[in-house]
Length: 105
Image (cartoon, rainbow, N blue to C red):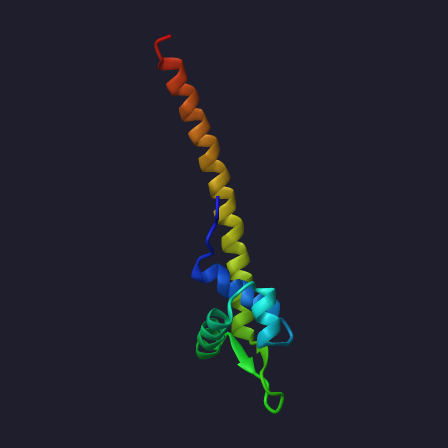
């Protein structure tokens, strides 16, 4: 099954790749994005203040303090979401067991 990434997942991937500094092509390959998508996402994160361009370096990007805070909160969110998914899977398993107990064999 193919799992598509959501907007927040892609933004987090871009910020992780950029870290202390990266050029557009490095971000493109590291975040596994097409040129069109990396351009769009870099534009978004710069406008949102999550990333800045380094003066005099051409197209070098760096994560800002706001971007670092976003990434930290996103990691916490991801952990909570994964724990909730695991719990929901267990609950669905319990439900299936109850359904089986009620079946006429």
